[in-house]
Length: 168
Image 1 (cartoon, helix red, strand yellow):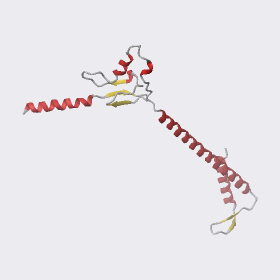
Image 2 (tube, helix red, strand yellow; image 1 turned 90 degrees about the horizontal axis):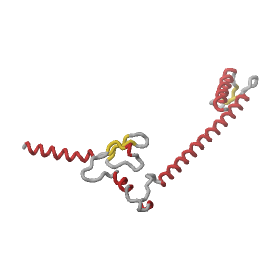
Image 3 (cartoon, one colour; image 1 turned 180 degrees about the vertical axis):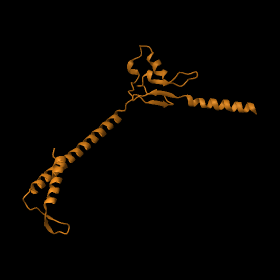
Image 4 (cartoon, helix red, strand yellow; image 1 turned 60 degrees about the vertical axis):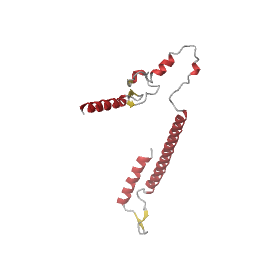
């Protein structure tokens, strides 16, 4: 019975060996990456922190090195160069960035027009509230009335605040 337990323990340990076949490297942004697959070709050898131990076969990362050690008589164009970048993906990203920039510019233009309109209205209101003139207004019930000095001063302050914030 004891030998069966030891045998099961040994099998469980060897079964977990597959999980230890992990790659670890530092990517271009300085983050550690853990994977069961080798890193991309653009990761330098010095950034690979851990490779899986191979039993009786060459590591996948060693394959490109052996291809580079091939005789010089082989043409250089025979091996396709893989840049690791997707041209269509880069184009789509550039289009999305351009669309986002155009959207942001349109929003800034809309806000600038609104500020200019607020500025013009505040300047007209300030001119209409000049002291010494009767200023009429319509109340909530639709009745016409005139502003007293305190209301006129409050409206002048509000117009000055709008002018200070929107007229630049």
